[in-house]
Image 1 (cartoon, one colour):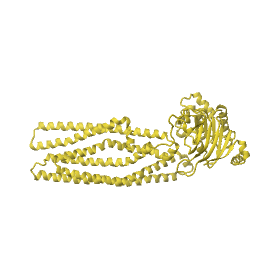
Image 2: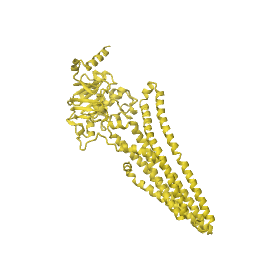
Image 3: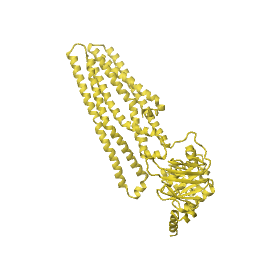
Image 4: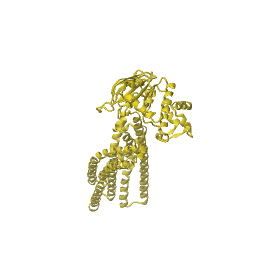
Length: 578
């Protein structure tokens, strides 16, 4: 874990190294100052001139200013290193997620990935800043102060040596209790984020069904789970401060009592007034360092679980890998499924797809119908390699899709998914996801093919109209047509429409299909639909049920067959007549 995180420091190595260096110098100066103060006190007891006191004053002020300078420099270096480290972590996590297969997203869940990119990275950042500054300062300060205390009076210094392991043991004991709770808290954070994400994304559904009370209760429960766990952690961590204060007060009382006895009742010179003052100062520094160390300890205890969660994503190896020296050219839109079976997880007992055999020639149109859960979408996701087959193989352009460079393959396979997504920005910016170099004329052309130009021209800003996040300011049918236009800009060899015309009327649907036939005759077209009218003119139609192809043929052949397709056709025809 540490090795993986350390590699993300990269260009911020310099401030990461400078921070502990500056802190070390600051500590050395702070440990020398009590030594000079002790000399000043002892000299004042003997009687010294004002000139010598002034020299002492100048030296002390100079050392204090130097200590301040190095302390501030350490703080600035730690802040620069910590913020830079967090930036690199977020960047690497985001890039990693971008390369995830759908199966990897399913494994971690969207809400969990959001928590790791935000809360977990912030926890690790704070712990990192503490580690390169305070975690260096506190042990170094303790060691230096104990060494200096031994040079003054070994017997008195033993008091500090006894106090340190007692405090350390208390911290370790607390850690054993809180670590399991922190693990549970982050899972609860995931659940909390999931609740918020679901509610915001589906706010229209929530309001239309008047389910605000239900969603509030669900969020309240998730929030309360986090509160209960954090309360339990805070109660345990609250023991830190009183244990530290008791230990500190007992230690200082012993030092002052025993030290005063030595100074007052003995004349052996084992301990002077100045040295007693020096011992007290070192005692305060040692115990203050322990207090600071407890803060670091709490932060790093929480951050260690966050770090594990971050590294889990960074080190995750996706089974869907881009091949080295993969093929960069797709020869044609030919598609072949050879004995394909597929399941979403190795642990799944049931296959989502079973024994799929299908052949499509370049330029042909395939229609797919089937009930909900018949795995229509699962089938087409294998073509652009959003998932890998479990058994068999899928060929595009005569080659197994696993042989292609992923970018090259997906550039030639345009998919308009069932859940259409538009991003915040202008219509032009959204369309250019299909081709970033497309001219305005090309944008208009594909929008005409997708029957989108007409409604765009009615907008005041036309193609410069701003689209809200998720396309909330356009209708479902308009969103579908924009997504189809965007896919057409890729000039793909394979175009897949996953129920992508469900929100448009039958006339518009017919015009879109007619435009496909005339404008992209060499593109293989796969249309998933619920309406028979959307697929009846296809060169080949398959009917899916329970992950299998149960019927296959042309419209006329399937109607004559008298099976599922004929039943759906008859039902929809009667409905239309009615």
